[in-house]
Length: 196
Image (cartoon, rainbow, N blue to C red):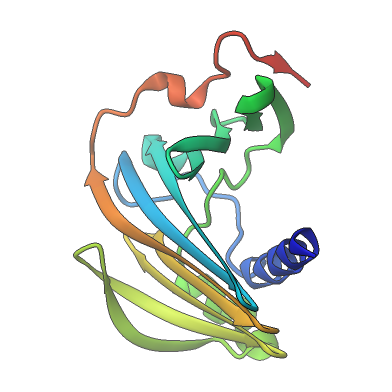
């Protein structure tokens, strides 16, 4: 049941994201950063909390997203600028997941969303939000009973909320480090991993 609910939530999430995905040569307006997110998911009476850390360099052309359950790294995705990989730390496995056209994260862009989604998903601008101390532009899309709310700063998506069908998931930045030195190994397959 839990797997099915997670799958349904993921499908709804991907439907919301289709309006934002477009290839970029400069994804973000700052060169590098580390963003820490809290993730809270509620499906019926079940609540799940986790954390994600996103590292990026070269204006977002290289990205790595690590997801933690408690303090344990459960999985990671990274883009080296050409290829997207999924890492499974428990199995020391790296799986090629296609071209890194979009990286691991969405680029926040109201202009693209409003052009492509206004008619289909009823995209509308909403009041700005303050996320991790940043004044973020925000908008909302609606498709059937699924409502997605996005907030971003410098084209970085800092908050994403999806609700519908008795479930709700909120991914929100709690810490942003701007123009920092990001370790190069975040965008490489770790030593000892097999590649599939």
